[in-house]
Structures are given as C-alpha cells and as structure tokens.
Image (cartoon, rainbow, N blue to C red):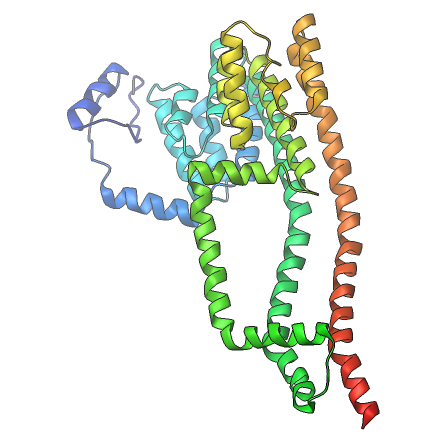
Length: 394
C-alpha cells in the first residue's frame, strides 16, 4: 500500500500478469499472488449452501454501516468491524473480501458489485448514487430504513402463510394415516355384515381401500409432483404462471397484490431519491418486485416512458394494478412530486397489509375449526351411524 503497509485481499483477473497490472494501476506493489483454486471456489460454494445470507443479516449490516459512515469511520475499518460482529460465517467472508477491495482502491459500490449473488442490483445502484452525489451516509441510512421495512413486510406475509400451511399439511398427513390404516379396520365390520350402506359409507370404503392398496403409489406421486413442480417453477413459463396464480388466489391474492405494490413504490421512490434516472430506476425495480407478471408490466412501462408517454399508461391496462396507484402516479407526474406520491402510496398499502394480515390471522382459526368439524361429521355419518344401526338391529 502507499503508506508501506502490507495488505492481503482478493482481486478478479484472467491471470497473474493481469492481476499484477491491475494492482499497479491502483498504486500497489505485488509481493505474492496465488490463484483462487477450484478447491477454494468449491469450498466457497459449500459455505454458501450451509450458511445462506438472510435478509436480516443484510439489514443489520446496512444499518451498522450507515451509523459508522455517519460517524466518519473509514470504510475499510467499518466493513471489517461489521464482519467481526456478524454471526454468519459467509457474511464475514464476504465483508472481509469487500474491505480488502476497498483498501485496494475499489469503490464501495464496485466492491459490492463483485458479490452480486449477495447484494441486489437495487442495493448496488443505491450505493453508487450515494457515492456520486456525495451523500453516502444519507443514502445508507435511507437504504437501511427501506430494507427494514421490506424485511418486516416479508416477515408478516410469511407469518400469515405459515399457520395455514402447517394446519393443511398436518390435516393431510392425519387424513392419509386415517384413510390408510384406521378407516379400513372400522369399515371391515360393515362390509362383512352384508347390509345396505349409504353412499357416503360406500364412497369412504372405496377411497380407504384405494389408499390401503396403493399408499406407496400416492407417496411417490406426491413426491414426484413436488420435485417436478419445484423444477417447473424455475423455468420462465413456470415462474410466470406461478406468479400469476399468486396474485389471483381467492384469499391471499389481494395480500400478494398489495405486497408487490409496496415493493414497487418503495423501491422506485428510494431510487428516485438517490438521483437515479426514471428509466434506469424502473429497470432496477423490475428485478426487485419479485413477480414476473409485475416485471412484464414494468417493462411495458419503460417502453411507454421511452416513447414519451405517461408512466401510468401500462398500469391502466391491468386489473391487478390498483386504480389508486394509477391515479396517484398521474397526480404525481402532473405536480412534479412523483417521489412524494410513491412514498404516500407505499405507506398506505403497508398499513393495509398490516390490517389484512391481522384479519387473516383471526379468520384462519375458525375456518380451520369448520373444516375439522366437517371432516368429523363425514366420518360420523359414514361409519358410526351405520355401526349404531347395525348394533341396534342385532
């Protein structure tokens, strides 16, 4: 380093000579360069698989970095301090690499960009805008706020989904065990009695018999559907259809639609505040929303804006885009306060999501009780009543 200190770090280059040239351009003298071997690369992949960086890790790191930068702590020292405080081994390694690149002369945004598998394009562009405008501290603080809000929003959505998913899974497992092992023993008495049975009992006997004979086939089919569906969703067409289904679900569809509205408006407002051009901001937001249907809408919006049309032109064509969003954006364009309008819309729908999650939580419990009651009623009418009638006849 220029001050005579020895610094270790990583640098991306095609070969050793290219690495030496890159270091010399930064005013550094190369003492020892060793290639990043495939074994090290494999170990990094294993480390990434075992210790995935969670959104909470990024929120904590961004918030801590914003505090340290505002306190005038040098960037390399700040990043290394965050690495030491992190409990995630992969996060520690990534931050140490970033600190080394900064000390080697790289910009903070470029150092983050070298780890695009961890930091999103939205995050990197916001950092870059802060460096360009000389307001890195303010941008980091604002970015930390937005990440915390997005993390809270995602946590609430997942929290609302976990309970019904757990109940439905438990009901399916219990139902499978009942139909395969318990019900056949109960219905065998009715079958051996050679008496006329109601259609509900006959249906239950047929279904339980199928489960008893082909239970392994059912398990294989369910596992196959799960694995096949997982791979299908990763394809472009499968991802689009899955995202379309999410925003059109009977109960949770409205929740998903409003969540994507909040992500879109909040991310776009953040980028515009950072001084990013509208078209470039829309391009970045298209990858942040997390829904392929919305992504296509944003792409259409970019085309309309490039053609000189309003940002609301594409939104007005789709029913899943709230009318309020279209109207408010139109007002924002007319008054020149698009960023303020976007913030207002995101706050409004964030509160709507809070209320919706609260109502869903209260609604799910009685709904589950009703479903359980119906299941018990079917079993009683199909098994216990015929057994009672048979015992009375005897």
